[in-house]
Length: 241
Image 1 (cartoon, rainbow, N blue to C red):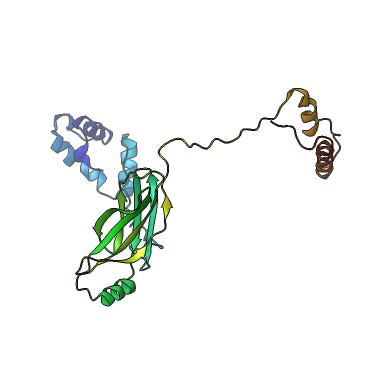
Image 2 (image 1 turned 45 degrees about the horizontal axis):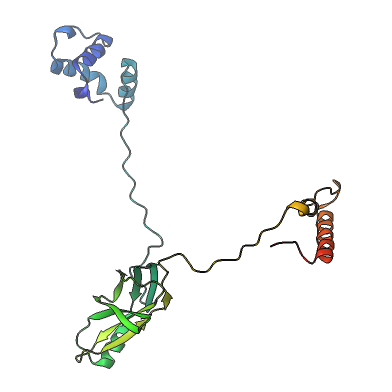
């Protein structure tokens, strides 16, 4: 027990239980010195004495466990050629990519380039044909959000290198996507409503109403199938408009 944390009144209460003479005239420091011998014989005595004195004895907190090592950590990269392009909404797109070491070094060697700056381009097909919509300098692995307003347009991305003449050499090309529209669709689905009125009794019958209670599941299935077949034979189909 940390006696120094107790108030003088608490120390006087303990001293009274231990019947320490002259306690009422002692200072707090003197009370601590007088009471301390009763708590120096070990943890077991400290716990019981503290409980008898009416004070909670706080057990030492266990040392925190080291964090469990992740058995299946997510790698920083996969060393695989990947370029994916996807729409977020009519005015936002997202691309993520990775160029493998082998592909990058091969293309760089074929082009005889000393620099390694990569360019990510976005293209779109619209009313006026194919156009370059965006171009950014990127690393070999990464992701990027574009803010290109292009509802209903076909879009894709390409990543590659620029040669000394300013010509772009694509290394990877992404999938092509159709951007979402920015308005309610002009297509109106034809609605089909089942009339009730005169067909209410027939619908009630086809739902399985009035079947014998002692029918098995197979019996119920067969009787429902028979009712539906008879109805189709007599009317062609369930009436609708």
